[in-house]
Image (cartoon, rainbow, N blue to C red):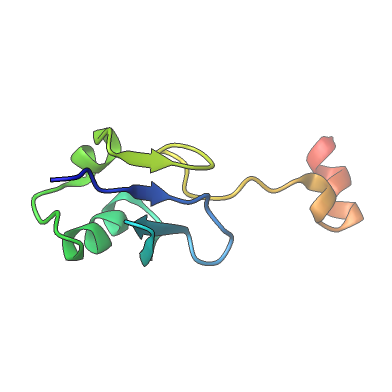
Length: 87
């Protein structure tokens, strides 16, 4: 049996992180708890949040299992918000 490909893409501001299995988008998640749902549907029914965080099969892009919100540059916001962020 060949090893499956699981990629968790970087977080976005609206949808969380895309979950890809074997080159196919299977869902999105905003937390480890939410991540277990699409993985359960893809055949990993026995996985819990700890398993998902530690499973070496999963490739984490844009941060590991602890990263669920995107980094926002102060320069991508309004000038007033950018100034406040640097003070």
